[in-house]
Image (cartoon, rainbow, N blue to C red; front, side, top):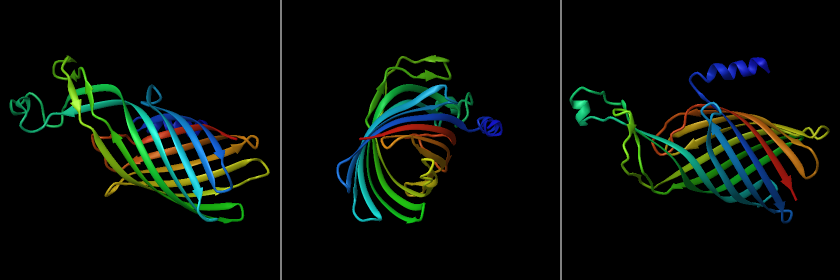
Length: 253
């Protein structure tokens, strides 16, 4: 354990570290149809900052023994930090006071996002081992947001000027390959997966190892470690490479 935390600390010099917590309620309507409601809180900046909270509703239907379809909506409320940078043609760049790429202004604000998804999951069991592949289309819309002030790095103070960030939508295809092994005698189901985020190119990859612990027939806990590797980024949803520890609680009724 000490060695693991040392490794996390070493990576934190260049990567971020956060803790993700969640609580989920599941209801099985019949043998094929089920619904779930999940709430989540995430942190960033080495657990110093609340990154976002969300609440989502999901419904799934078992098409065949090996194929499941699902659809869902999630409301997200994000803690944003948006930084603009000096570009060619700016007067301060032309005068030589600053360089292209130097930070110009920073905005900090909370704002909502709306996320919709549709998934197909194929799975096959080999004894206690299950292999699954999930393909998920995800659309996220960020409404326009106006802030009352931004911090100016040049003046070293807030400019007290309104600025609007335009609304924008984003489509992503998420492909996840997962292995899990059921240890029924002790109530554990360890798993490992890799997930690719594709938006015309691979934007990020997530590597996860974890386990679900079945406390009773209705109650379960989940623990995982995840590494998030960013391949490309933009000003719509900037994210750093990140180490994540997760803990979740699930209730079935």
